[in-house]
Amino acid sequence: MKKKLLTMALAAGFLLPLSAQWTQVGGTVKVQPNTLKYVGGDHSVKGTSTMSNEGYVDVRGNLAVENDAKFINEFTSPTEYGQLIINDQSTATGKVIGEYKTPGVTNFAFAKIAMPYIGVTAAEIADFAQITSLEWQNHPGNGQFNRNRWKNPVFAHINEEYSADDLAADDAIAATGRYTPFTYYTLNNLTGNLTFRETNYAGTPANMPHTLPLGSFEAGDASATNYTRNIYGEQLGTYLKDTYVPVDYAQWSTAGEIAKPAGFGDNYFLFGNPYTSNVDLMSVIPTDGSVKAVFQTEGSSFDSNPNDGNSNLNISKQPVKSTYTNGGFTGDAEAFLLRPYHTFGLKTDGSIPSITLGETQKTFEIDASAPSYSARATNGTDSGFNQVKVQLLDTEENQLARTYIVASPDYEAAGAQGNEAYDTNASADVNTIYTLQENEDGNVNQELINSRVYINGINEYKYVGKPIYVVQQVATPGDFAFKFNLNDKVKNSSDKFFFEDRESGEVVEITDDFIYSFTATETSDDRFAIYWNENAKLDVNDVVDVATETIVYKDNQEFKIRFAKDWTKADIFVYNILGQLVHTKKGVNTSVDYTIPFNTSLSSAYIVKAVNENGEVITKKIIK
Image (cartoon, rainbow, N blue to C red):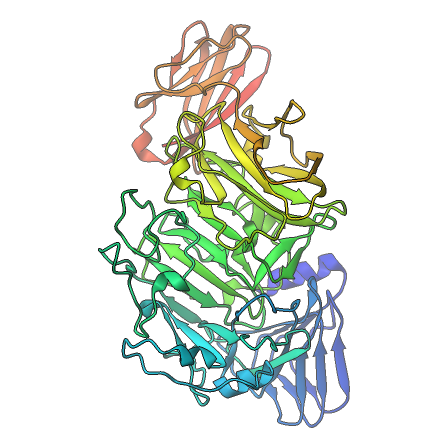
């Protein structure tokens, strides 16, 4: 951690003198934005002193803030806000104040929030949020519906019960138990008076490690007419939003004529960031498929600003989401970077018992597009999928919405997948985009016509040269633009995505950062389409002759190389996932296909390199 922080600070050019100990007895000390204050020992704020932090404070020892002193993490802007990291083996005493600012939340009945403190009561949280006109209920979970319980100021979501407790005023947050710093809390805004812009929350930082329980939980009922209810008598489908199940399914039931690819609410967990710093989820989420999706919830989402590349805090109707496929995560890399007070969710396959957040996950990184995130999440050359991101921009190049199309061998040819994501929040009064679920023949799947697909997966070998329709919902007519971004796997291969505007008749190859401007006066569900490649990819037994390109393809259980017509000899090299050379063959005859003789059971991935007599090189990753 120390090395990581010092490297970041030195690169930025701002570093306060390092201290073994730090004791502040009076006055105000200010840590400027993008400045690191590193204390190798204990940090004490005494008397009436004030520590004003707009940058990064890292304390390796204990933190002590006396009653009349103040330690404030300031919020200056979405890219400049104070963060505090305390070693998870150290002790924190006294209160730290954290300023939390977002745009107004008048469009939300309940605002989601994390509370990274120990000992704070529900009454204190309501007081911080200036909720004064509601009534404490503490309704018992006896299965009886009671509308009055929604007058409660503060709620806490309990994952294993698929419900939110209406807290009693004296319920307090503890390191372990029912209400913890990693619990997902909601603040009641039914009266419309909830104010976040000038709100300060305060408490003793929960700097210790936290184990977030997961496990296996099924939410659905076997009957399509008997919707599952929680312990408060409320139907799950009226408040739970599982954005990984199409809305056209009987969502809160396991029955229905259409087989559900990802049971509604099953293994669906909501949490909060337990720390006073950002958290890197990518460093703790396994990439074996046990975690199927990572997302941040509406009310605490990121919105990438295309003007400066930074991620801005936003009350959003399009929360960031990521789904697992073929060894990596698709969609929004921002889903893995939590800010203080942010909430997030996981959808799993039920096999993973828990994840633990601790020192390794605490970070001062604020940009999810940084290489440390994009390479590990959705951009890596080694990812097993091809992805295009489509952003809808206004005339000022502000992002209004985004959607993704992903081509991978993990997906079925067409139709709803278990690892896609849907936009369940967009209303009819906003300018937005989404895609429509497809059939194998390239037409729209009419059974899923109401499901707005956010991350749309297609089979990279089977759904080729067929349209994925991009719907642009127009609430306010005007001039717009699409901006396209490709992940590294597409950029470094011969595979391509294409874009079609059927109104203008234009068909263009999508390149990274390509922008297409247009005028729209009404919503259209068939004007715009995206295609994956022009023709079927070379696969299995239907490989065709290629005159200008050397390719690697799979024939049943074997991998073969077909050489370009202008190659006469070739040297072949095969490397395993560790970079070790496992096979080589010199002077291969290129007039016939070459079968690669390696045992695919020894590794899950290989790199094949072929070099011709003129030094021309092609490389191809093979995934078992």
